[in-house]
Image 1 (spheres, rainbow, N blue to C red):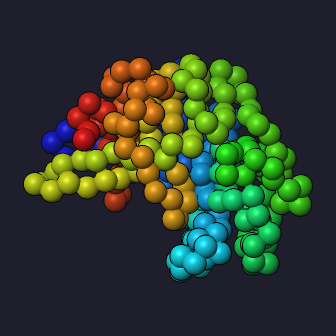
Image 2: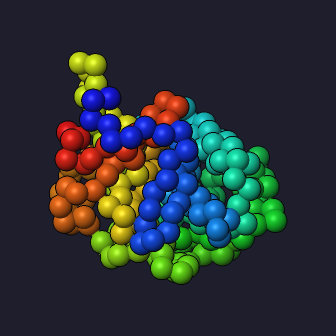
Length: 230
């Protein structure tokens, strides 16, 4: 990629003086706190679409939980924060299969688990394990679903993606968006789409294009200036 700042298999993202490991899956890991953060799982999106007559293969929840299981196995966190929109709609948790419920329970064993409420899932039930919160502050970092642009904030909601041109062709990939003081995480869910980091929604958060897209490549992350993305 001609526009690369630097490629890395073990990328880091700095937010308000804290260094996070940016996992290729789209998760962030705060090593000092043994804290893993994921955003926008959108579990049961496939079944949600099916209720409206749009038929998608009903495997998104199992695929997303499988990826989550793999990243948890890599980092063995003490705490997991799911940054909102973990479920695609208010009733999605009721459509979980028994095996998917068991998978979630298994991931929560021996670790603290926090569900941040999102706009898709504002009222999460108590029988899913873990605790529910509107936001969480740890040290200088505030974890919430919808970004406000505040310093020290890590949020989701916008599903950032970057469009790149390389070797004469254009492609879109999920990315972390960060300027060192705040970050927006990519959506983790198997069926989630994305919003271009050149959209006006990101201008409200970062004010200028002086932020970086940490793009999820096939086998590494690529740090690319937002101004160089389409």
